Image (cartoon, rainbow, N blue to C red; front, top):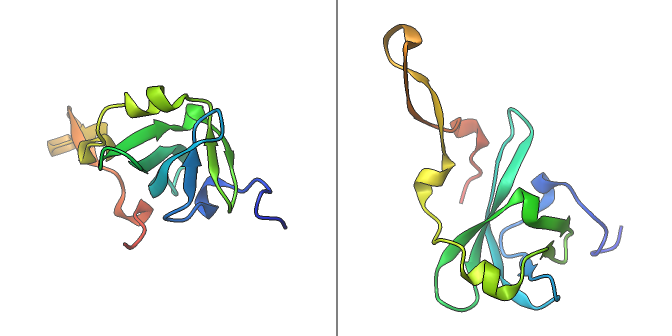
Length: 116
């Protein structure tokens, strides 16, 4: 298998370069966001090379994942315009409370979290 062969979302590792649609490196993977239990890939937390901040690149904008890099369909300016990543983005709306009658925010299953 070559470094440029496509891989699944679970195979992407911390520090993998992330590129804009024109192939220019815009940052590196800081976290893969998804649910192992439901096998759903939500997107990537990307540390930008400029600006010293992280953004979330939605799964719909990821066009290729390989051991060598992650390619997006976004321009550099579109990626830089994404809002700063917020930990609450990893929460989802679920039933919580007595007899599960009330909707509220619930943290994703801890089994989804990778160490580090």
